[in-house]
Amino acid sequence: MVGTDGTAGMTVGVGLEDIQAAARRLKGRVRRTPILPATFQKQPVGAGDLFLKLEHLQVSGSFKARGAVNTLLSLSDDEIKRGICTASGGNHGLAVAYAGWVAGTRAVVYLPSSTPGPKADKVRAWGAEVIIEGVVWDEADAAARLRADEEGMTYVPAFSDPRVIAGQGTLGLEILEDIAELDTVVVAIGGGGLISGVATAIKALRPEIRVIGVEPTGAPTLKRSVEQGALVTLERIETAAGTLAPRTSAQINLDIIKERVDSFVLVSDAEMHEAARWLWFEYAIGSELAGAASVAAIMKGAIDMGEGRRVAAIICGAGEDGIVR
Figure 1 (cartoon, rainbow, N blue to C red):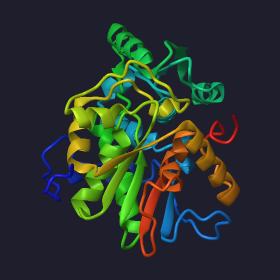
Figure 2 (cartoon, one colour; figure 1 turned 120 degrees about the vertical axis):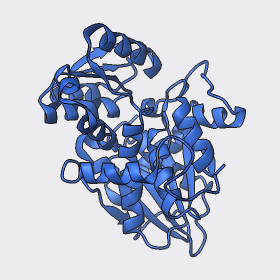
Figure 3 (cartoon, rainbow, N blue to C red; figure 1 turned 45 degrees about the vertical axis):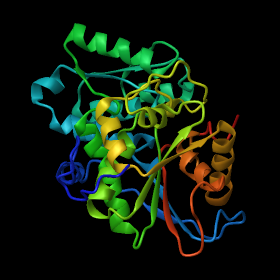
């Protein structure tokens, strides 16, 4: 699925130059999260070298701060003054709430009822107005777009804006700078903003590195869309990993993923819980269910972790729902 052009001039959506500009814009405004070599394991996951990108330590608890703040810094003063509005499964809402706090502007976040209560409380703690709407993200998003239109607020997409994608792509630049001779990067997929940005950065600079996306078995939105060659809207969502569970994605994300992502792995909720418990036991990492998805793909044997392999897994979000159920 990866195009042959490994340069900044790739054919869809967002290029390397956009991500590099975002990195300059974000310097000093979000955290450069550490890489943890996954050594000293009581329960080894393979003979190769595993590296954990600890994005759960990012401001607001997930990678989403990168895209939200990059978008905020790209807005005009008037757009910021009018306030910002979004919908989220939780993490993007936290990031937009943080961005609103940074800018000193009003932030309104729509969340589906499936969002864990502690996450909704944290969005409020950053100063945002929280509205619970619908059961899944798509329903909350429709309400957020309507509110933004009615009140003239600036709508901040969760995953489908080039500025959001470029912001998330800065994570890929950091991985390449911090890990030598990497073979594979494993990335959880919700709407596709994270993997769109990371894959763009990776393939532009190191096209030989494999980028593998991980979705829940109960929400294979982009895997099915790639297989069918068009956006698919799932009839239902059957996963507790709410931040990985939009019923549909967006064309920009599908186009990038078709061109730059090598393959997909599906993981069950039980496998994500097992991976979250492994992260907690081995490394005291408190990961939400979605944050453990990349490790779940490795633990189930879907990623080549043979001798000499060097694999990076992104721990994309903090939480306790992955550990406790």
